[in-house]
Amino acid sequence: MKKILLIAFLTLTSMSIQAQEELTWHTDMSKATDISIKENKPMFLFFTGSDWCGWCIRLQKEVFKTPEFIKWAKENVVLVELDFPRKNNQTDVVKMQNAQLQKQLQVNGYPTVWFVSAVKTAEAKINLTALGSSGYVAGGPQVWLDGANQIIKKK
Image (cartoon, rainbow, N blue to C red):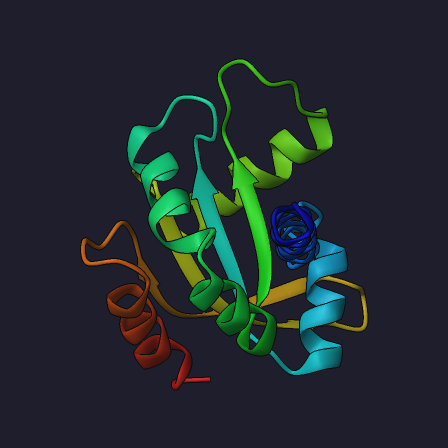
């Protein structure tokens, strides 16, 4: 009986530690840019239709929610989610920001991930330099991360 309780305790502890390993996805480009500049990391702009795009949901499940991706993302990029939901509500400011970036980076489909480096001008204007883009890639996290590493080497 003690062994069963110990195993149950260890399993629950392990699950709560995993839950704490969640990533921070920013939705405010200005704040994400400040972090990107401070940490000298490129930004990872994830254009998604979170509540309707099947390939977006699949990419998140197969790659973005894996331990390999979580470790890689924390070390290499600042994550920004630019969502275009059909059901979930967003503020007008977020909608406008996301639409502007979609137009600027010519995003025509979902999921699309752009890797960009950013600088802020003296007038607080954000200038982005596109490093490259990706989308859904079959093969799991390592295949996806190999492609992402090729792109962020350009920074």
